Image (cartoon, rainbow, N blue to C red):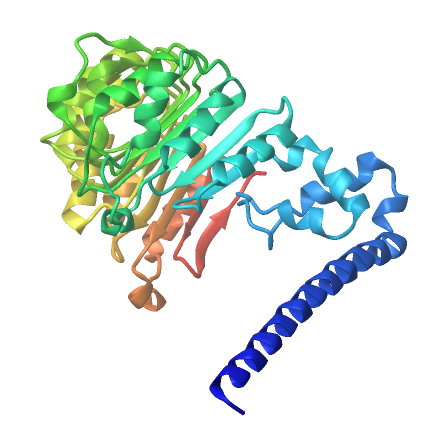
Length: 418
């Protein structure tokens, strides 16, 4: 055959291939529809009351559902028509969403549909990565139902070509939103290597009159961007910060605060914490201090907290630091006079038992719970409680104190009154 004839034959075969592809596509669609009908006939869920089937669907949700076809709730729509109707008429399936960015173009339409299925339910939105304007605006459009906003910016985002301002969502929200009436939890997680602007966060706080919990971690805030006035968070009960975000303490007060978590309490940043606690500690019940910890800073803030009943310390460092904490900070009866619960999540392998037990014995009239987690995982097999210390622990337990002492894998001593 000539070249022309061969080319003509190829064209005919190509056309036939395209026709067969279309036939295959049609057959696959027909098969999918038939499979959905078969699933509906076999499905026991369809024979249950809608209230029960909806609750079964809700129990299938992961903690932070994402908008993927291979996971609930989107997956539940793809089984049969009955499941589709149940899923789309169950708002509780759609009130929580985890958005990992970037997403394909047009994703905001899917997001809008997701929020429509949620109806008037309170929304919990978790974001990871730098949101584009379209997605951020879709979230802002439903701000009147937004109960939790959790924004995470990881270090991986800095490698993206379009990495610019890592807090786009907060910037956009702070300018577009006039009020977040039901926002109860705001969490912002960043990267210590990236500097964030403080003002958008403060603007969000001012628009959130019912905020109950605020968590800001690994956010290096620009000090020169601080606000001139102090914003009162009148309903805030829980606050969690690490040292890179302490700048925000100079801009807020929380007169009804009940819980505070402070990671990285050092001598060079304790002034910000002290100033904040002087305005916000009247109702404080629980104090958590995570590593790194410097004793002078702890010594400065504990006298400001007479109402605190529960204290928890993270990793304490060397033996001398633990010794100093008990002998100079916790020993005076005037410090934490209402202390009922004292927990350590990571003590050294050989803690200063004499100092620890002296403080516990002196406070036995009020203290009701003690938890001492001891040791590094690599050396915990050789950890034990000295006999004299064990005797004192038993005496405290006999007096009504709940005590747990152990390692990550072993309980060395445990008496509970529950």
